[in-house]
Amino acid sequence: MTHGYVLAAILVTAAVTWALRALPFVMLAPLRNSAILRYIGDAMPVGVMFLLAAYTLRDTAVSWQAIGSVGLAVAVTVAMHLWKGNSLISIFAGTGVYVVLASTLL
Image 1 (cartoon, rainbow, N blue to C red):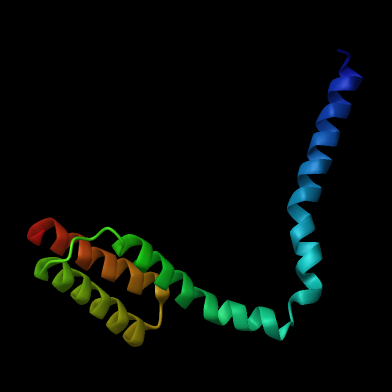
Image 2 (cartoon, helix red, strand yellow):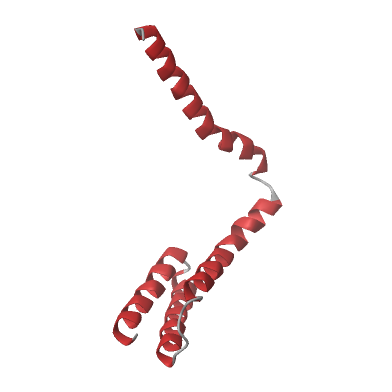
């Protein structure tokens, strides 16, 4: 391999990598003001949290301790979200409460 071949390979690889990373932004630019995407952006976090909760709890044994742990964790998550309005803080708080209760009660 010559130096020119290696340089050409590096340049082609860099150009393809840059294009693949820029392409989604270029394609989505016309959709930024779309009402549909705005609705999806507003509705998606709640839907994703519901699916994650359902997936997490699908194998949970039904007992009063499990129901109490899950119920309290959900209540803390909802309360934190209503109080702070921050999904990340709400999720971390609810997860922390559930982990502590599941470790001590279950």
